[in-house]
Image (cartoon, rainbow, N blue to C red; front, side, top):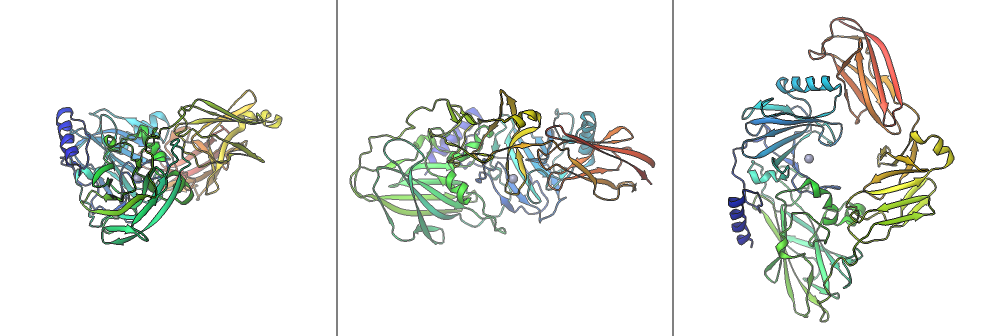
Length: 563
Ligand SMILES: [Zn+2]
């Protein structure tokens, strides 16, 4: 077990006060961020697309406007208002060195809202990232600091809650702080995956095999045969597993996986802390192909040489296995949550014939900067740090689609795609962008830079890219009758842009900028006539302007009466 590691961890914490923990709970006086029992639809470390989830998702009964409480006294250090990602979010720094983060919020209490409004009016923008000093907004223990919502990238009402180490900004598993989250269910191990390597390099072209499992309470065994016969030297495992909390059917992530070989701990991963710098490397941790093809969330139990994630006990090595003999070797895989529930999978492996384990696997050739060109029409420039593996890329042009023969390659950092423009495109060069169609039919705009007859964009995934031309401005319409209003009512409009997307929007009443709120989810633009907007009864002139990402501009002007 990892008793020694725990002791070492405690010593490290004592001497360096740096939180390197493994299931060491952290002393604190934090209260719950919400006034209802905490049930989770998502937890820390969960495998998502392109990131490990950095907080917990607290259910809010499918509605918004639950009171959100500061978990301890402190001060507001940041407020972020965005149409994407965290939506409306507030950050509170606490005296114990942690920052709590509350996201997808609907709105804030007046004490906070009026300070945000002031900054929004200063900058004449709805969206902002506002850093505040320790004196600006102090927060008491248990103070209501916001109301829950569904803003930003949220796809349903919930509270996304994070705890970060203030100094490093690394998200820490909130369940290490002993919030009352009921969980008496042990993790479920769905499938075992075996990866067989050729003894030449650590290429992604390994052979793989799935094993179905049978469950007896928290014990799992292979469905057909308890012995896996091996015919390659080097091999490794992957595990598809999830955890449920009480009172919730959502499949959440597991806390840790330990693999024991003949009784010795051989590989260990656990979700105590995540670094945003390396969070995208989830794509080399999880089985990328299984995720892209089937949305299967499989943890690989081996560490790629270019994997910098700090979720492993790296002293144990990289998780690759190899046996020279033909004896039976026992494998035990333990999966745990943070409420002391665990499940285990037991089976044996055995070589068919003796094997050599000398040919140690390493990422063979160093990856140098590369340049792929398809008839000088489509050019890809890949940096030595862009990919995890030394794989050849094959650009493909199909009509007006610029794509790749193999799209299931995880990207470590951006690469550049350049596409040659024809004469008619060159004549409209400032109206072009590179993008792709999302599943919902909308266009994802990746921008584009035109030079020397090419348009180029920095990209981080291999997809079907196209060149889009946007010369039509956004369309602004009344969404309701806006001609006559009472105090505390809203002016509501829709702004749509079918190509590059709505970028800038401004509302002026009698030539004064007023705060308006736009949502890309329903394309609505709303202006609340309230105590903050300072509009007196009487007749007013209203002008709305909207720009898309390519600066195509449109206006709507009308008069309304405020009763
Ligand atoms: Zn979340």
